[in-house]
Amino acid sequence: MTGAVDFGDLRRFTPFCTNWGNTRGSVIDRYLIDPFIALSLRGTSGRYLECGGIRYRNLVGDDQVTSYDVLDIRENTPGLTIQADLHDLSCLGEGSFDVIICTQVLQYVASPGRCVEELHRVLRAGGVLLLSVPFIEKDNVGLGDNWRFTRKQVIDLLQPFQECAVQGRGNLLSSIAYLQGLSAEDMDAGDLIRTDPVFYQLVVAAARK
Image 1 (cartoon, rainbow, N blue to C red):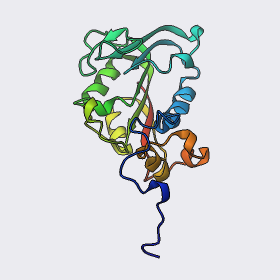
Image 2 (image 1 turned 90 degrees about the vertical axis):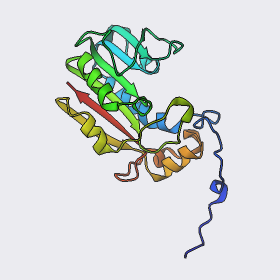
Image 3 (image 1 turned 45 degrees about the horizontal axis):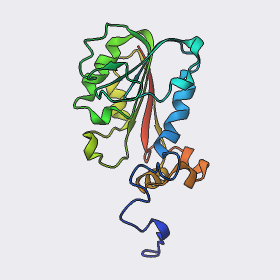
């Protein structure tokens, strides 16, 4: 019946936590992204590049790693080894890396297409790019927020690659919980991992050059 919806604790105009739920537990978007990255890194080896910070180094064993670089435009990023702008990676040679990890970064750049072209260039033939981007997200004004991405947009961005697998992750409930500043621990795991083909929260992709 119209007008009978009880919003309960969710009838509020400010989130439970303004820092993506960090004060309550695990951030929901990373709860959706991290298993994808962990699975995709299995069987990889060689020269790794992680963009935007160091988060996934512990997912690859020392016997897999020839080198592990962290790239960001900010000089104070933890683990930084390469300070550069994703739009211009002229400091790096073509085919420099076997695996590139770029999660939740492209929403902050001026030209996602240009950045993907550069990542494609510095990836060796047969190498893999692991990517995630938001579809549902608050406006992070302080970080220079610019973009949101549908699955189709990601597929189009990855046109230079030989093959790619693009998936939506999350659903209407996970998106609402995320915007409300709730954590993964506030939710039932089954409610978070359920994927909706229309009301997804973010997009993940594995693309091979």
